Length: 138
Ligand code: CMX
Ligand code: CO
Image 1 (tube, rainbow, N blue to C red):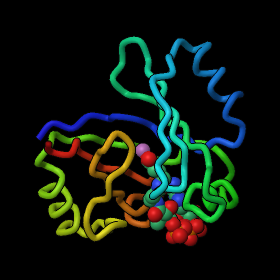
Image 2 (cartoon, protein in one colour; image 1 turned 90 degrees about the vertical axis):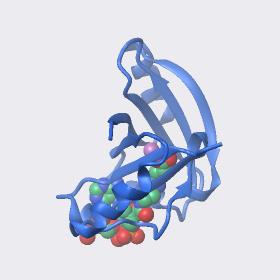
Image 3 (cartoon, protein in one colour; image 1 turned 135 degrees about the vertical axis):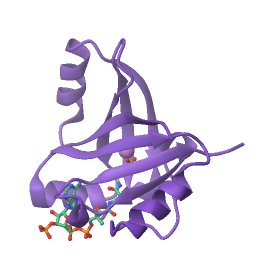
Image 4 (cartoon, helix red, strand yellow; image 1 turned 120 degrees about the vertical axis):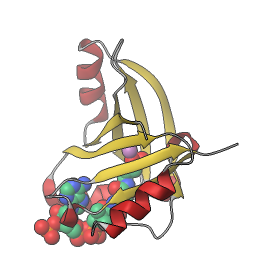
């Protein structure tokens, strides 16, 4: 199985300020998507060479998980997202569960870019929220 660090999710309060910063650092805005299921608008920023993107999470649902995160912990790094090749997410999920890690959803949901996504609960990872995902098969 190959795994890549696809993106780092950042919960933002002041989107223009953070976006401008990353643009000065040389990243390019590569798309915005409304992800109703997650209560957010996501803004992707791409570095010129590295494969790891920045995903800015702008709250749309004031009752959603990102709004709750900002209220409790303030804006900042929210999750790391690892991507596996299509067809590998279910076996990876099974292996994680067998090893005692807690997944947030009983089965993957569809997130931004039509990816199948799940998360490893921060209570079992030493305090990190980790997203795992794969592209949906056509
Ligand atoms: N990183 C680290 N710890 C986090 C966290 C995060 N992003 N979010 C919550 N926590 C911690 C809380 O601080 C809290 O810790 P303590 O018990 O020590 O206080 C604990 O997890 C429980 O938090 P909570 O506020 O009670 O929140 P919930 O249990 O209701 O929800 C979680 C936590 C992780 C289950 C929820 O945020 C979730 O379902 N996340 C997955 C979905 C998501 O984050 N979507 C947005 C991103 C979408 C995208 O990538 O496109
Ligand atoms: Co993400």
